Image (cartoon, rainbow over all chains, first blue to last red):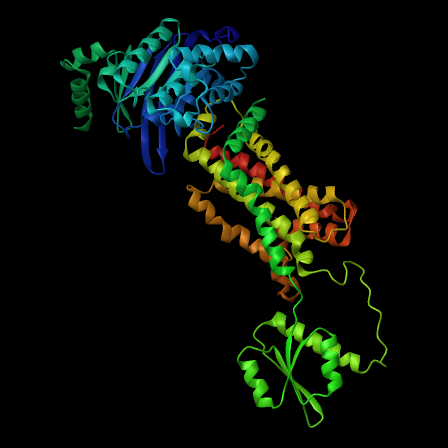
Amino acid sequence: MSASHPFVPPSSSASVVDLREVTRKFGDRTVLDQITLEVRRGEIFGLLGPSGSGKTTLIKLITGIDQADGGIVHMLGEKMPKLAMLQRFGYMAQSDALYNELTARENLQFFASLYSLAGARRNERIQAVMGVVDLLDHLNKPVSAYSGGMKRRLSLAISLLHEPEVLILDEPTVGIDPVLRQSIWKELLTLRDQGTTIILTTHVMDEADKCDRIGLIRDGHLTAVDSPDALKTKTGTTTIEDAFIVLGGGIQA
Amino acid sequence: MRTRALAQRIIRQFLRDKRTLALIFIAPLLILTLLNFVFNGQPIIPKIGTVGVPEQLTQRLTNVDANVTSYSSTDEANQALKDGNLDAVISIEIGKPSIVLEGSDPTLNKATLLTLQKAMQAANAQAVQPAVSYLHGTEDMSSFDSFGPVLIGFFSFFFVFMIAGVSFLRERTTGTMERLLATPIRRSEVVGGYLLGFGVFTLLQAALITWFSISVLGMYMVGAFWLVLLINLLLTLTALTLGTLLSSFATTEFQIIQFIPIVIVPQVFFSGLFNLDAMTPWLQKLSYIMPLYYGADAMRGIMIRGESIGSIQLDIYVLLGFSITFALLNIIALKKQRSI
């Protein structure tokens, strides 16, 4: 995909996502308050926080599905929201948005068509992504016969279909068993090494350790952004969990 | 391409959902058949009791297909009326005929009076009888023939409204709408895909209902078949666009059901099933905002009066206008799901 977008403004060559003082309100409730954040090209960036902290809202602002009330969102140098940008990232929602009546192949075909993939190329990509999530044997099964973990993997496969340069995953490993989680993480690391930027949300602390950098989010505030090791050093703790409590407590007081 | 992919997906989903298929294709036929039985049954034969009536009149009553029983006293006859064995009692008192009707069913009252009238008329056969002929319809056109065209339109409208509304809503509640809108699909392509995907089924449904009513149920029809089909299709398109639009304002399937008394039922009253001439004039004007009114008007025109496309073009334009307006509003309403 990147070959078709040769022009990248030099100022933002290193930043894939750039948020400046982004605020989002629902009614008079402020869900995100003055978030400033930069995600660099080729890193795995984790958003860590308890449920209800504003992670999903932030993801929706980055993707352009939702619009900020204040501040500016840039992705790949373009001001969001912008329709053409939806072609350039892969997205996996928190809920498995799949058509249960259809087979996995039909689901993949449908989403591939939405990303303008057709013909032999489409079939090739379907085989490739289903190989990645190890579901090739279940390609022709209706999704209603899939287990929770299989649905999660199929959702991931769909987000990889058009080989996006940015991958945005909302809780990608929920409901997936440890062995499979390992293999998905292995795949994410491989994708990163090939140059894909990955932004994901999680509330699993040991997953945060695998990210290159993490942002701690709590009650709509970004309390800290750094690499896992740097955060532990800064707070004088040995686990991300403890670091989170120290940083979160600090802001509460 | 995206519109086509969406339409194709909807068709695939539909074909796997046998119950919904049955609801859209079999249920309207079933209901129309039942209505046909209800309104197209045997002619009513009134049961009439006579007291002291001359032999000739009794004879004539029998000639006009009445079930006549003669009683020796008025009390006896009235008792039979009270017991529900008779529909009317006719007696001659002091040379003047008097009629007592059972009276609880207006349809039966009319039928009984009509029979009695016919018998009385035959009594003075010397009087000049006007020759009756029909500009539209025939003498033996039943009430089913008269409001059948309205019913065809109504059932097409109702079932498509329900199914389109629920399908569009389910896309939102299962999260697939959000996922769909995270792809580069335009909001207009979403609405267009739904129109195209459902359009295929509404076209088939319209054809099936129309064919069934005319060929199997033998509904009165003098106009062009393709015109009936066209109007029925336009009507279902309106239902489709209205159903998907209103589903944006519902959060559960149950709330879609709640739209029925608000959106569907009033349209039935204004569709021409009931004569509106008796209604307060300003209230009559309400029918101008009801899609079913135009659909029913055109259907009746074609099927009963054999009208050509020229005389129903206003109905066609208005129905098209409704569909386009609802579709555009839906494209705007989708902004609630995605800002661009």
